[in-house]
Image (spheres, rainbow, N blue to C red):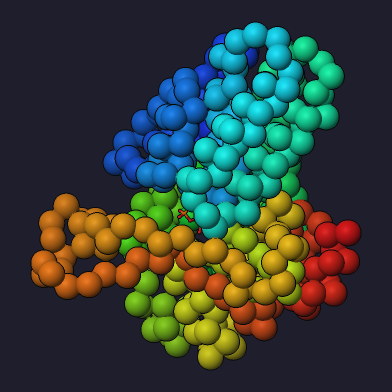
Length: 356
Ligand code: MRU
């Protein structure tokens, strides 16, 4: 079983409620693990803000939120001018694209929404609005299906008695449902395997301890939180058999951007001869970028480092540098677990073949 919501149902961080005049219901992930609170988003500005402040986060979930955000942004368009409506779809997409720069799924979903509107450019405006809502729902449903397939593809990597290390949150909360890296764990758990997950807490915003530990616990999976700087030690003790994380963007050669700290874990895994895997859907790949050098890395506010615990954690006046992601070189990655199977070896040719 995967993580459950407050009613014992499948944990879904984001859903469209009602018809075209409905709203987006999302879990406010900034409130976890303390409270499971939901936000009703009735306009695109609320979605924009939710993505910026990480109320919804994780590459696939951001893509789903943005697709639904496009619908919220254009549904009040008045009149029957098709050209003007298509321009409005572009304008709203550009507004949402400016929220966060690294996750490919955001741009992939927005491009798909724009392409969908254009493909129906001969219909009347009311019909295109409905088609866009249908497309956003398709994006959500397809992501859920890809996550299930990722779990199936990777589950055999986790055997009975295994120790698994993960970083940040690549679980149900980060996707439409089920997750990517955590999908592999849920799938092994559903097969009755007994294993232990170590969740790196993931400074500065603690997605590992706040979110991953929360959802694994709700799924009944044995989870232990460690501070990020304890990873080498637990590896040396022999507690880790495999490392599995998610991804925000994978370049054509397999270099992978994920939450800052992932690269360090990959280096440590190599030093301890532990296989390191990335789990991600095909929508996270960006074949237009040759290598990790071309992936834009988001930099976030200094307060996330020195104000995250509600008290100052550094003296005033010092400098801060807060990159949200880093890039793990392909040669440190044993395999890419996708909905199409595990890509191994991780190189340009194997990726091109798997995604063809
Ligand atoms: O800043 P965040 O919380 O959006 O970062 C999320 C991650 O780095 C995840 O590992 C990644 O998006 C994969 S989610 C399936």
